[in-house]
Length: 305
Image 1: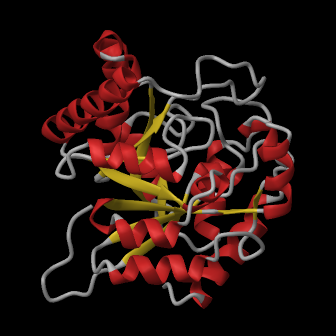
Image 2: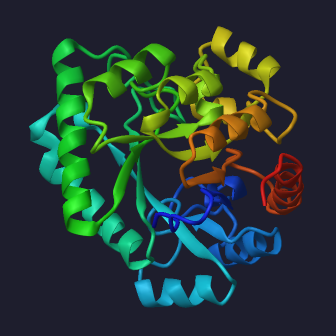
């Protein structure tokens, strides 16, 4: 994201994403068509969007620019999934996945690439893929390979990597997020703080912003239903089925409260994107738009434009 001129006040730019329309996959019959998403996110009053899963929106830059531009939309970021704790052996496969998404993100004049760690258990079936606790060597791989990725993405595409702590990954709890941040170069690696995922894993978003403010490069605004969360944690329900149970809920009905999060973010005195994401895959096609409109109104009541 381009910095504001010195004379301008830092801004928090509010946007949304395909995730808030129940989109998790490039192609799924239970998801709304991409044209409907673009029509409705614009109708809900948003001007910024993320690309979502690569291949859901058109991947031809000229076509995507036409489709978004005609609706008054701009792109804030692309998203990739990585398993960098596996070390150098997965680099070529990782870069093959990242490069195309980074190129499209740059072509859309966006400035960020959201990096989500791979899941230790399948988010649909609950099958455990690997140990949920990393070894010391895997932590070293995660740190060094993330720095390598951030450097390559910056040098080749001019994008800023923002790593997204996520439920059912190895970067999840307060302890693991702090360990990751302490092990990585702040000049290369920033954080995409997802308020819902961080609360899901027991974290306090305001405390994180106040403690690691210089590392906060991007926000995802999301809330969890504390009653549903208690149930899914007690039953060790995987993230995907937990979402289907309604663990992520419409603001302001859950936690964390977003007004103090936004207030803490404003105190950082930097430009930030704050992208609304309400995980609800799968969902009825008529459900997302009314929620998106109400959420936009709620954020205006929090003092955001």
